[in-house]
Length: 96
Image (cartoon, rainbow, N blue to C red; front, side, top):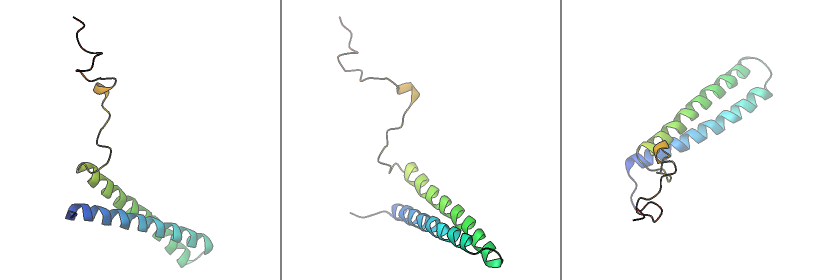
């Protein structure tokens, strides 16, 4: 089973995004530990940058998977199909 380069890139984006968010939480905690000064501001800025970058990478990974039809749930809900049944089922056949 070979994996396409697009699928591999999607997994890399997802992994990098999750890692960036996790490191963002660490820098958030470190910014709470250090009370003031340059290092405090540095950790706050790093938290913001890592969280935004991580959210972008996770979103890009999910967007790529959805646009390529790789999501397990390919059936999207449509209002026009709400309550629709199979036309060949006994409930919809002409009773004549």
